[in-house]
Image (tube, rainbow, N blue to C red; front, side, top):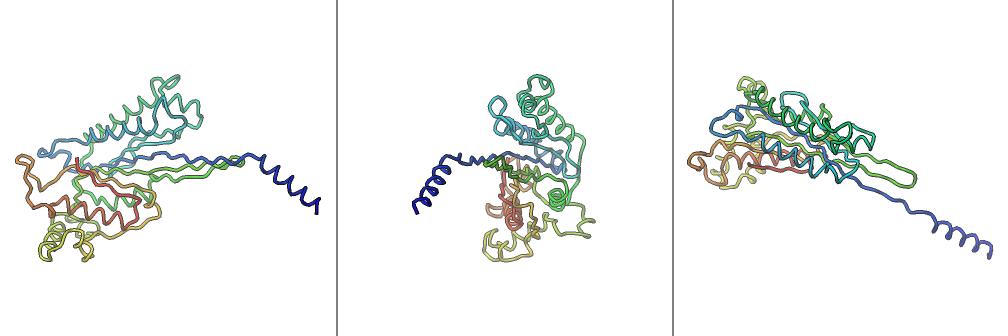
Amino acid sequence: MKKVLTIFSVIILLSSCMPESQNKHLTYQNIVILSDMSSRIRNERFPPKDDNEIRKIAQYFKTECVKPGEKIGDKSSITFSAFSEKIAISVDVNKIKNLSEKQSFINSTGKYKNCGLEKKLVDFEDTVKSLYNRIANPGLDLISLLIEKIENENIVKQGKVIPIGIDTTFINYENHIYIFTDAYLEYALSEKQKNSQYYFGALEIERVRQYCVNNGVDITTALKKDKSLRLPVCKSKKNKYLNLHILETHERDKDTKFQTYRHSKGLRDNEILEAVWQKWATESGFKSFEWKKY
């Protein structure tokens, strides 16, 4: 018995001397910017403002995500494309695997003095401006295209687990999709006649408005009670990793000259569109949803 107790004590002593595992949880940002490039960008009633907002996102990527001069080994990325095209430009810090070279790129030093992060972000903004001057889409099946991009264009980054001895590093990504649009889901009427699944324009907005008026309910209640007023849900395994941001650029029922609205508060176009988008995103399983007017 004494021998058993001695062995047990030795085991406890040895286990107490073993180092504890050190687990690290690291989170990086994957920012995807999409623009509908519709007729809104050449609408004289509404001055162009996408450039400034996209510049803010690019600066956020630099100062809050990658953090030159402060952070080591970042893996964040930012991409831009029009809905009608593939990715036009990308700045992906994680493409550089060597840590020393990566830091040189991030800080724009050494061999990356003139071709590092600083230069790549200038190129990023220049490419965005060039695309806005070149591309004009009269109307797109926006949600169908969004679904296709999520499923087929590898824009969603998923985390991974890296075991190193008794230690484990958990790599996580916050995926953000920023959509620049006036939020109206309109495309050619000839195409609507073939497929109106994700069409939501003036007539559809008016149906929601009239339902609210006739039944004395708000927009949220109307969408809850009548399924025909909503967009069809589209669930995907990837949606749960995505934070969806809709940046509404124009309010068509607003008179910008006199700063008045065609409809009363609670029944305005943008309020209906926000509710419709939000219900679709929530029921489709997106991680989060943001609607921003600017």
